[in-house]
Structures are given as C-alpha cells and as structure tokens.
Amino acid sequence: MSERFRDVSPEDAELQPILNGLFAEYAARYGDYFSRDAEVELTEWYLPPQGLFIVLEREGAIIATGAYKPYDAQTAEIKRIWTDKTLRQQGLAGRMVAELERRALLAGYTQLYLTTGFRQPEAVRLYLSQDYEPQFDLYRDPEEYSRPPFDGRLRFTKALAVPALSKSA
Image (tube, rainbow, N blue to C red; front, side, top):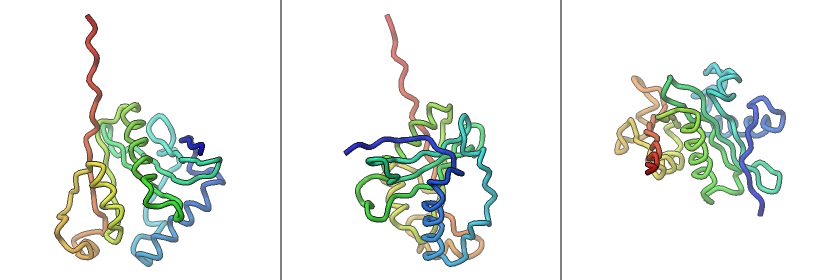
C-alpha cells in the first residue's frame, strides 16, 4: 500500500469536495453554531513559508488532510484535520498531526495551538493522546462550553520539542 504526504493549496479543486464534506459534518453536529463563513480565512495563510496545507494519499486517493497557519510569530495554529469516514480509527489523524508538527518545527515554529468543538470527543481524545495541553476543564460537561461566556471552542496548546543539537568533537 503506497502512502505519501503531499503539499497542496486549500483552493485546489480536488480538495473542495473534502472541505465541503468536513463543513457538512460540522453542520450535522452543530447546526449553524459554527458557520463556515463566521471565520475569515485567507488562502495565503496556508501557503509556505508561514503556513501549510497537506494531504495524505493512499494509492493516489486523498485519505486525510491537515493544515496550519500562523497564530503568532512563534505559534502555528493547526486546522482542517480530516480523515476519510471509512478509514477512521486507524491512526491517520495522529499521523497527520505528527507530520504537521514536524513541518511546523522545520518552518521555525516553537508552539502549536488548535481548537476543536465541544461536540467532538474523538478530536479531544486525539489531541490528548498527542500530548496537547487542554486549556479548558476536561471534567466539565463539554456542552457548557457552548454557552456564554464561552464560544464553543475547546483550546489546546503544545510546545514543540526542538531536537538536541549533536556535539561534534
């Protein structure tokens, strides 16, 4: 089975059905709570050198996506983590997150930030398993985060480990 990561533009035609499906999943979970148009998104945020949008392909078919954009000078914000519905629970999202972390570190970022929605317990489990630090109370009913003063987003952060420099004699 041949798999590879590939850089893409978020405007690539091949991504549009996937992104539409991702936002349809959000709508099914949240109704119009998180409107696709609520956030301003600029394509250039997801292009190197400051950003990245990648796909994981298997035998030429896209099976997972992920991206990051700048949050601040030291922090990249992870976005658009998606895996094909028929291939979930196989570690693909974890592999995507690990690749985004690797690439963000190479791009000079030292921290990562991300949000997920209050009705995505599988995403919360994924990020906890990848050593992301929740910036919310894990023991609170997630639905509480959908009411003021909260905005429905569950925030996570992670410091990127900079590999130790080898010392030459």
